[in-house]
Image 1: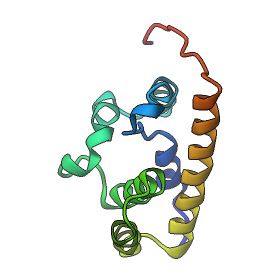
Image 2 (image 1 turned 60 degrees about the horizontal axis):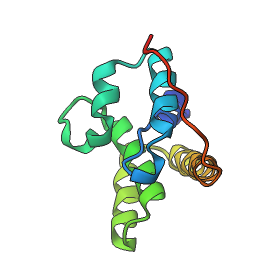
Image 3 (image 1 turned 90 degrees about the horizontal axis):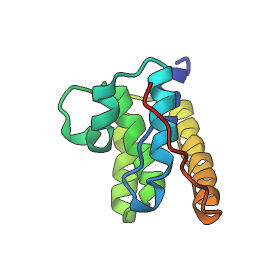
Image 4 (image 1 turned 90 degrees about the vertical axis):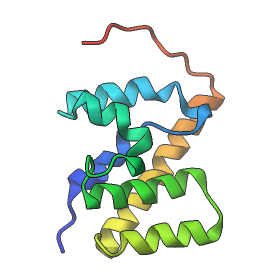
Length: 124
């Protein structure tokens, strides 16, 4: 199965649910809009698992993996998220999404610890 890079890129636009990552929402939302994402999907991304059909099965699988890597729920929930994702994604896609989540989380935490300021900008 060929790796679908669009699914992998979705994680880069995830708006973190965690309070400590709020400053990064501006950057990720702007990048998602520039990439052609809709404002509705960006707005509802934090509740992707409650939006019934707004996100594809593959996107939901990728988001579940990304969220498990970010929030680190109990082991049973992490195992269930990856097992469910493997029903619609290849092993290569699952591994790539996990690595993307790890890398993005590392960058976000460096920015948080450095108290990176959010610049005020107009929505374009």
